[in-house]
Image: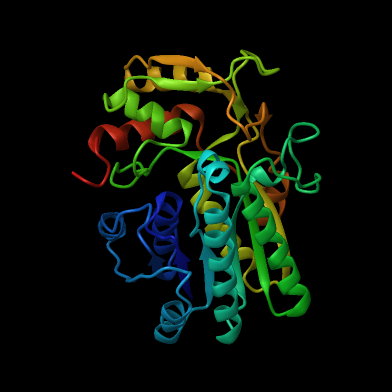
Length: 337
């Protein structure tokens, strides 16, 4: 079975490629490298000892994407490709809507043309907005607090409508919580271009000395220490969830939706302390005003994924921080050594 991985050179995509290859799947990777490095693909090959085709291609280019499907006998798609920074989406909403939604529409049209009916979509816990209670269950009301989250929610709606129109489709929507950590080899990890938008890569760059201090956005939330609480999940656990989705759902028509998280909530300051312990480095920080679009707390109930996908997170917070530091300390400038 061959899986096309869009955004496969990126952080989550690269780790998922490793798990797919190690599980016996063939893959092809499509990525425009706008927020990733081709070097990650060489590292995937080094880790797995397996080869695959790479297509430098943008989903906004309909003809080029169609050529990929003409060249490859694809059985299913895992769709990661898209812009992903909450703060940036607030500043550049039209860019986010155009890139994420139009790119997905092109992909789905081409899949239908080539009778490729299996897709696993990279969604997000942001589709729950400011949740009514915790932990979050899949049937909670959906809303968003930022344009990035809105693109995920709109694409979920598009996928549901697509299945109504064509019952051949098997659509699996994975709503991620907050992936962190890296492959235990230290060969692949999160390598944001420019100043990181997410907490853990920012902490890692403070630890390595690339950034002077961490900005903690808000300390007046109704949480244990006033800082925002999130459900952090090891990127390898998240990647394995994609393999499970392909294994369990690729031949089951319908729309299947799962939370992928640990069910544990950690505050920003708890993450700082955990990373200090893992790295032996002091993480300096300053308290800043809340960011627009942020919510106080968010963590998952992943029972449905356990029952239907046979998936449970295996790594704890100590593992996540250890592996994240292993990657960052071995690759202080990411892939651009």
